[in-house]
Amino acid sequence: MASPATFDPVLADLSERIRAALSAAGLPEADAALEKPKQPDHGDWATTAALRLAKPAKRNPREIAQLLVDHLDVPAVVEEVSIAGPGFVNFRLAHSYHRELVRRILVEGAAYGRSTKGDQDRLTVNVEFVSANPTGPLHVGAGRWAATGDAIAALIEAAGDDVVREYYVNDAGEQIRRFGESVVLVARGEELGDDHYRGHAIVEVAEQLRSTHGESLFTEAPDEVVSVSGGGAKHGTDGRLLEDPEVASGDPRVDPAIGASVGILGVEAMRQRIQDVLHAMGVDYDVWFSERAGLHDSGAIEEAVTALTERGETYDADGALFLRTTDHGDDKDRVLIRSDGRPTYFASDCAYLRDKWQRADHLYYLLGADHHGYVGRLLAAAASLGIPEDRIEIRIGQLVNLLRDGQPVRMSKRAGETIDLDEVVDEVGVDVVRYHFLRQGLDTQVDFDLAVVAQQSMENPVYYVQYAHARISSLIRMADERGFDHGAADDADLSLLVHPAELELLTALAGLPLTVAEAAELRATQRLARYAEELAGTFHRFYTECRVLAPEDPDRSPDEQAQLDALGRSRYWLAVAAKQVLANALSLLRVSAPERM
Image (cartoon, rainbow, N blue to C red; front, side, top):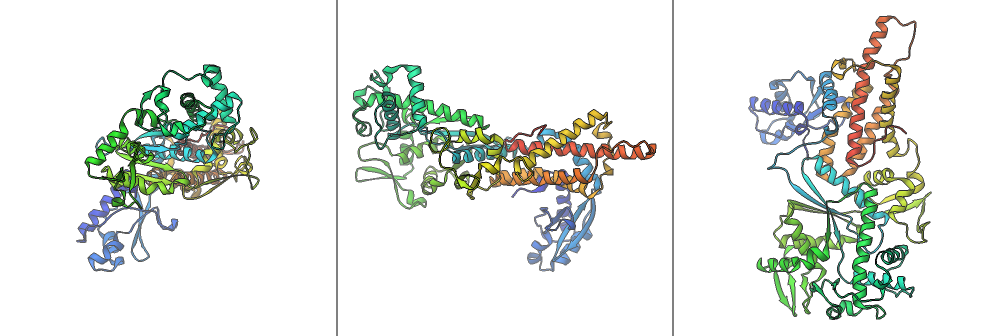
């Protein structure tokens, strides 16, 4: 787990002093990490070094704690050191620490809360998320993976690593043939079969392709098309495509070459629609990886199979080639090459995994709830390829239940079908969609009630956080309108910040760097969202209890006015620092920080 000392030089110095005190007391080495006390009134930070040393030192932990305190060179920034419970050593920081914190936040600005790593420590992390089939529009569940994957990527970047956001486009195989046939039949006004795709998206794609390519696209076979089967063929005429059993078994009303050609064009049109919807959600990818071009046409599948065979991970049985996945924890060995010579989808998975590993140091997959059975085989494939176990993560997210006033929403207003992601975004807004998904852990099903999440009230978490930012912006505008002389932050007497609400806010502001680091390490966006909510609540209390701009009073003496102005300046800059931290937290969640609400 991330250490507070990593992100705060004051705490790093305190940890070093704790280690030195243990050594001076003749005690064994121990982890001098600091943590938050369970009870805030015990102090700002605590160490459990004495408890961990009790067994190796064969001494009472409170006795060890006392030795630590007796030998500790207490820095000026620590106001109080105390021993509590069985051997906790608690530290309360002086007000000077908090004063420097405000200046640090204002100097670092948008960088506050972020970490940097040297070239040797910095990893390139490939984050693959959403990757929905390009045969239809994105559903609401995909919006959860989009928001979560994008925010996890942002957190990893904030922790100092490089990130590649990647979308795997499944644009090969039998489903593309069916998609192409569906578009052709709709364009011709013919009845769809049981295994064809339906819906407004098919109609819209047919109209788009007709507008771009003309009616002949649906009636005349092209001279040359790309195989959509993933069966090993690269390019060929329609005659060659007829040799592929998956294509030849299609609807007899649609020429296989026409279906393949329309399928490829239609899938690209749908992929572009998906990209546009995700962009509207604030999600942009570095790589759109085409299965057809990147694996089949490039020869990557054959290369991956050869590499696995050379590693001794494959064997022949019944005319097929198998991967020894049971050697790596899978429940059965998996077929790579069928007896007719065609690669399986699993062979594509292995090739894609190998391709990504050649481009990154760490692989992160965010998969939907219907992919539980996929995890074991993918981890086994990674082990077969020699990818270290600690360099691949696979997370499964739970479902999204779409509601309105507590009742399930089944149908779209637009087309009488399952509601699409873009329709939800249009109704409630990007910030609402993103935030409500991000504040829940991936292992929790989300009830997304359209009537509840759109409410502009303090009971709505995203409104609550955004309103805190807007409230500070309003305060700053009001100060300017009144001609309030807030001066420069360096000139403000921050030692005046002694009110409990002020100290509570200062403590909350100090928590962003550690929260970001822990959220990145645990891939837990909800940690940062909850932090933002707690910080907003802390600011709202400060705003209520600590007046920044004192009302004018002609009966007030000059000395009294000067004291109020000095306190107001300190509180003003504290509020400005809070605004920056709120903006930084929301930015990492890819949620806007409005100036007005």
